[in-house]
Length: 309
Image (cartoon, rainbow, N blue to C red; front, side):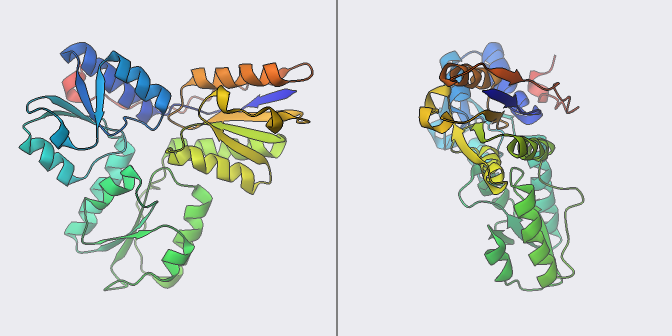
């Protein structure tokens, strides 16, 4: 069996930063440290931080007055920040800077009286946070059908924003429909889909072209991980999402000579190593591991001011 590893894969700069924020906050201020929502969508990461003293909540009202609350990498709405202020909570913001960019754009369009078509998935925590920045002006568009039937007050005053972890290809199709329906639509100054999402999608397409089976390490709640599975299947390659090596079914690899392995942006490398080990155990012949050179994506995000120095 040949095992092909994707590059890049796994943690992105925003996830690295968010995890470091929680770890440093625990070390500096002592446990417990409260985190609004899972800091990133990965059970392994969350359980590891919980063991160190992090407590995960959905509502600031669950946090004792005056305690420390960290906002997750997915971002929060102004309403959540207001509730934290009412609770007199100390807060540290671990929102990915690329998500913050989308929030700033939503606020700018709101001030200018421009309606917004937000391309994203209903119920996703990042989408909920973004919608909270301009709730009266945002229309959620999940697919091409939503784009085709979108109705707005003034077709000449409409802008597009997107969730940062979407499929680049699917988003492009939706934007094209919106541009046909609203020729004067305003597009983001810079693509909202994050660099890590794009680069991991490009890598999985190459992987799927070469492999008989693709395994994506990630959580069911992880949007970017699910998009990787979908992209591999679009190429025509069988693909599965696995949280851990234990999820791999022996039947998947029967008569498979080449398996591609990648990981979503919130999956730690240790889980990838476990998957490779499990595949090696299931292989019925000699195993060859193709490990490409690591890709330096050249992105590092600064820690919040409360944790510097």
